[in-house]
Length: 321
Image (cartoon, rainbow, N blue to C red; front, side, top):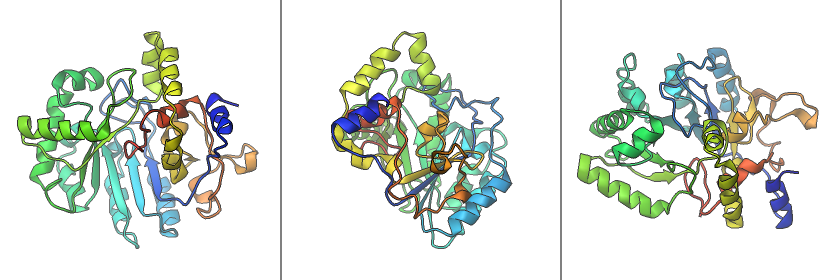
């Protein structure tokens, strides 16, 4: 039993799946950036991308459900060849779904992706954009030289075409801490971002989500290299907040990998903690499961789960409490 499972047992709190509200689809590990905090180890040389055959199987399965939110992530999801096909098919589903794109912003300005911002707007795709700070030094330190300027240019572009200005075009920003610390207050930081981005660049957005860095992938490698992994784990464990349990994203989300395989969350996905059939070790794919039958399913945990329950908690939709 891992330390997180022990903690749940200690407070007599089971962690089980509820009704599925979000289908989060990781379409691959290809990305135009190589960010220090990336738990996916995404980058320009990664070959793992979702095929159209897998996309079609996901769409067929999804059409038989009423799951309201589809969350597309990566890598840079926009870089797979069938991204626009996937989005167009998703937005054509009935009942209408909320479609989200986790965008690194810089991809909107890359050669070969001209018109991508207009495409997203035309399909009313909600954008959740990485933006770890409103200062060039912090952003470039975490995400690479020149990323801040490109991100600002992309945000201005999104504002010009109506994002965060028109009521039906939502633009949210995501903050990850620089280094092995917990995020500050989400409400206070959102106020800071809104003030500074508006004053310095005339940029507006809807919400800011604060997300903790989990000690896996490239961020874990950074911690090990700097002899800070044990220290960061202790920080997360000591900051465990039981009131975050009910709001954990693993409880109402199905995470889908680029081959169609299923997990409790995107972090478990990167650790290959794939669902199996009755504990037999037989891999489960999205089209193998009934969304109703997985309600009350026990969620797979590991010590990395302390990253989601530390302090105010952390989900792909920001702080929990």
